[in-house]
Length: 157
Image (tube, rainbow, N blue to C red; front, side, top):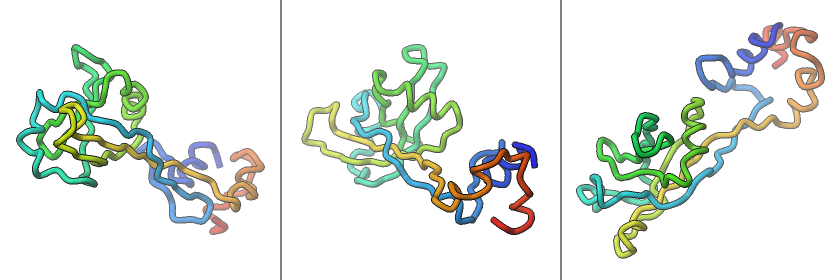
């Protein structure tokens, strides 16, 4: 088994991350960002502010061609642009998005009584792949992928 076959057997092929249903790998949802959306008064927030509730899923859209910030990340609710991730905090998230990392954003707090720039907070999550004890103890972890039997095809995984 070569390395690409090994990665495909784990579900880490070039077409994106698809985890196989086996007992070697677990995933864990991890919060990687939580802060206020910037620019609420400049976009569509006022149109939909009464409809937004805590826990609503949001869409993050990368704007690498943005003339003000090449790491710009737009925050949308459906087709409405609410604002942006702060420019001083968006570089890591932008790089993750550019690399194809699956991230999800949700409303973490809406408070229309706060300052206008603190009216909406979001939290962003991604999934981490975590090998479990069985994987760590397996032949897959102790040998080169080319040097072990094809455990996946033999049904040992």
